[in-house]
Length: 107
Image (tube, rainbow, N blue to C red; front, side):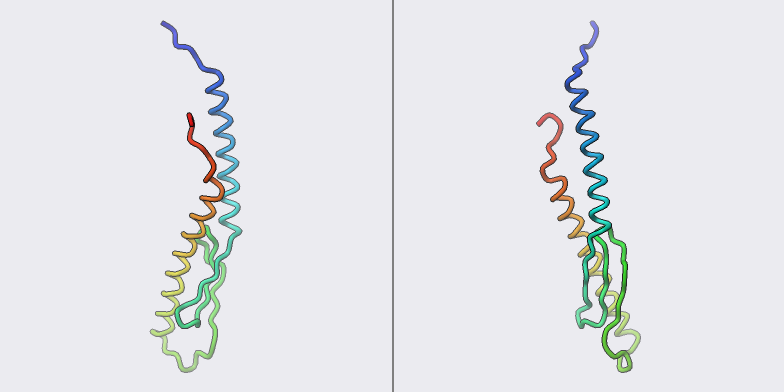
């Protein structure tokens, strides 16, 4: 017995795939453009990171003459760790904004 092909379902699936592809491109563009600024606990180190996780700038503030290298390295690690977490958080928020209303096939 031959199987019937549901043309409407196939058309809907193709439309949904195209919409999902468009949303994915929008998401990729948004996470690359969204920049989050993070500071180390003492404010010495500032890290700018995109929601995609790309560090775009690192800035050092204040007088470094009284700072020792291990202390500055600790502040840099803290800032980079916070930047990683902030990028993940921003990416999740953007994902929810873009894909939140996207319904599953068959809903």
